[in-house]
Structure formats: structure tokens, C-alpha cells
Length: 409
Image 1 (cartoon, rainbow, N blue to C red):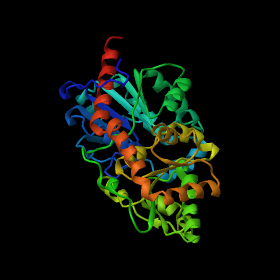
Image 2: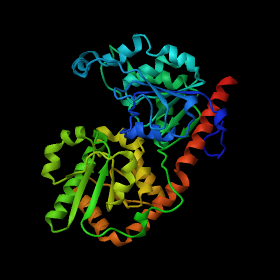
Image 3: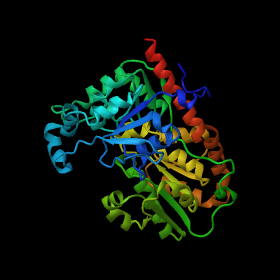
């Protein structure tokens, strides 16, 4: 089976009909797992692709024109949240036992492959309902499943997730660490293809590589602020404040939605963080090009270690395509740091101390004139290994091979 290393391509009319089953956000404003999925399947023929989404923001179709059928559980969040400490994932249990939404539509589509991309228990439950429609491939983007806590009386996400992995003919994975963790958790081996966020890259280098910016030094973070990011973002925000208090002309701009701004608004305001709002993906690269340093944040907190070590964040390859230097703040063993270290295309702050973070940030400010050289190396690696066309060709060939592997069993 193709392991993803070859450049073999499959003609579009020969690609399998894929049913994507997920609880990730596939809307135009998606980030993280949802944005990765939208990018990865943007070149898949619309007639051969159907999504079944348990996300409450499920659109009618993706920005790539792929049809999306909504399958959210429909239970009020205040109820599921209040019941979870006592009964566990009642929303996932409801998804498992109620009639499958749009069953007739899915049956008419006649999928040749079911691609399950769960990010929480509801996604596991929905994927389990769809196993009957064809051979299964799973795609996990971080190591949440093996560490799923929760009360199991309503829905045992860990056990159901292990069953899902064992039932799959192949796996997609976001990092080498996660691939190994999946094998240990599932207790089986499967053909595995490691695939990261794919980015559109033109033939010409981005204008940001031509010269460093002038004026106020701008540090930027774009994306969600989950616990797997929080303490690293907070450390850099406080470091920027200290450097500014010491006389540096510097600011930290946070590009995120209202939920994550409001969640920590008191801290953002206390540290002088600039509210950049949420950037539409089509404006992301141009907006970040007007910054000097792009932050990749992986949490140091011990309870987030499995997330930091396993998840190569979507923003890493996006940032690499922008043409500005990257600062990776997080433990050295974080998947994003490991990736950037391997390619020698970022600066690093890998200890959660003011002295370490201040030193790394100050070095980036002082190296402003040479920033384009580091950024160019990142862009060239992104163009070589993570360009949208090349990444999707490898992925689609792997999925086609998974169908053939199933057919000869």
C-alpha cells in the first residue's frame, strides 16, 4: 500500500466516493482540524465527496463546493454540560442511539470509503454509526482519545474510539508521535500516512520575503486559544509587555474570535494585547505578512503534554507560507517544535520562565534585519513539502489504495 512517500497520482474520475464523518467545523471561518480538512479536500471532485457533520455550525457546503449534511445532536449545550459530570457524554449517547440523520442521502451517495475525523466523543459516536457504509479510514489530529476522562455510563468514548481504530483499514495521522501513540492505544498496526495542513503556494516568493518590516515590532498569534495553547501564549504576551515597559516599541496582536477574546479578556487587557479580531482565511496570509514574528504556541502544562507532543498545529504550515519569521514557544518535545527544529526554520522559547521567553523574544527583535533569511527557509520547505497540490495528490492516492486494500481482503 502507498505509504504517502510516492508521488503517484490518481485520475479524478477514478477517485473513490468518500464520506467524511466529523464533528470538526467545516464552515468558512473554520480553524484547526476543520480548516485542515477543508484545505486537504479542496481539490477533491465535488461529485465524489460528501460530508456528514456533527458540528453545530455545519454549512450547506464547504468553500470548495462539497456538500455537507448536518448531523448535530441538537441537545442544548447547557443541558449536556450540566449532565456530563454525572452521566458522561449524553450528547454522544444520543447520537449513537437516535436514527441516523440523512441515512437515505448517504445510501444514495453509496460511499466507497468512510473517512472518520473525530475531535471529541460526539465524532466517535457518529463515525461508529457510519461504519456500515464502507471501509473505514480514521484521521486523528491529536492524542485526545487515549486520555479521554469522563464518566462512561452514557458513552464510553475511549472504548468506542479503540474499536473505531481497530475497525479501520488504514489511518491518517498528524505527527510521528501520534502514529506511535495510536498503535500503542489500539494494540494493532495499520498502514499510516502522516499528513499535515496543505497550503496554497504560488511560484513567486511572497512579498514579505523581500525585506523586513520597519516601525513598531509586531508579534502575532492567529487562531484558537485552547488549554493546549494557553500558557505559552500568556507567557509571550507578558514578555511583550515587559519588553515594552523596558522601552521597546513592540506589541502583541491576537487574531482570534469573540469567544477566545472574551474568555481571557481581563488578562489580554492587563497585558496590553491588541485585539485583531478573527481573520478570514482568504486574508490570513496578507494580514500576517504585515507582522514581524508569528507565534506557534504549545502548552507547557503537564496535563496538556499529550496534546503538545502529538499535534502538529495547522498554523505551522500556514505561517511557513507567509514569509515572516516564526517563534515556537512550548516544550522541546512538542510536535510543532520538533517539526520546526528538524527544518531549522524558526526561533524557540522552550522554558516557561520570564528570562527564557524574554531572551528569545529580544533575540528575535534584535535579528529583525536577518529575519527574511529564516523565513525564506521556511517558505521553501513549505513549497517543497506542503504545497496544496502535492499534499492532496499523495493523500488521495493513499485513500484510493485503502479502498483497494479492503477489496482484496
